[in-house]
Length: 305
Image (cartoon, rainbow, N blue to C red; front, side):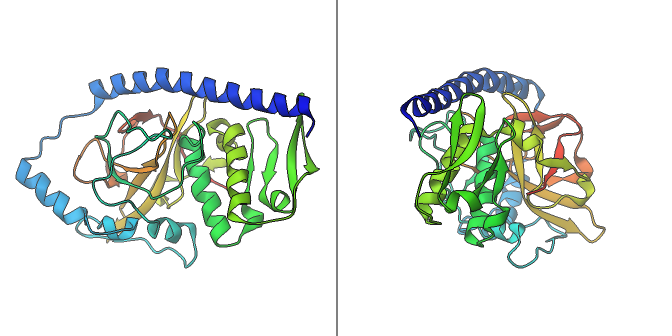
């Protein structure tokens, strides 16, 4: 990569980071104000809330599946062996009670909206935000299961970033408005190579590119890996982590998110029921309130990775 090209790449990355930080401050302030006005008060008695918390939250569990029991009368939907749903259920969590930290090591200002924190790496700098965290989970799944050909995501400009090409030593060269592959490194599928791929992806992908990689889905058939997505600049996305259903086929699901500025990925509370993080499909109405964002009808999507 020439000196001029390298400088251009750094400037593009820096500009994107500055824009994301400014957008984060504005959008977070708007969302906090909206939710202060919209989230209904919890009318459960303290004893009832405590009972729900004891039944759902298993503080000694160290994965999503062992930390969160399903509501009474529900069972987890079947996930195929080695599927993304199984990967999410077995994803390690930090100990119960952990705070959410930002990319710079500081604690997030709002510590009231999460139930657990994923034990997931954060890329350096303010890069691994909401869409990036979801992309990382999909990428980690493909990497751990050696499905390298499926690890291919589009950048905001439409360029397809294939890990198959990346691990063979190719790198993306930016030349003005042109983006193309060039031989630039030894072939490798090491963890270091994977992390560098993710850092590049996070620099140039977001909710805008993710929106083009999703299709509308039926909420009644919600599956782990589905998303609620507002594709914008800034936008936001939350990921369906797990799904359960009762004997009549009524489903409920857990949600997780990263956010702006870049921060640890975490399991969300349900604003309508602070001690029970499961969201019930039958009770869901639009606009759909999550702890820090409100989604409109049409936002429920299924990634096609």
